[in-house]
Image (cartoon, rainbow, N blue to C red; front, side, top):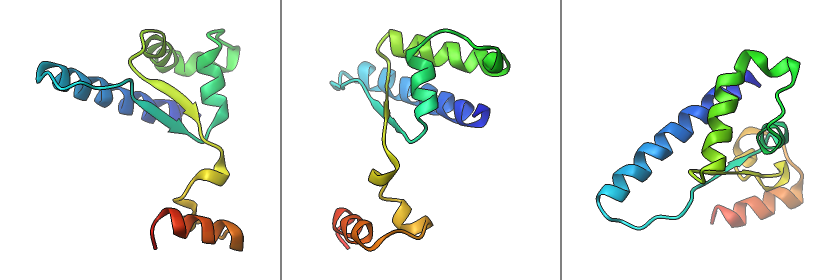
Length: 106
């Protein structure tokens, strides 16, 4: 979970940089949504209580919580059965295969 928090924190810093660049260029933007398949990360950010097991990645946790509170980004849980990239990385059922190929326009 620590690696996922680090990767999300890196993505959020890049999104903030890009948003500030677009703001300087006077291009209107909306609040970006980051879709995550890890429900634990989304719930941990929604609830700011730091548990004993999260103290080793507390800085990333505080950073993401700060970004969510100030509306820099929105973290949204995406259930696994909506992830189209599973078509390329996992063995999936026939009905999901058909749905994903339609979504990918294949």
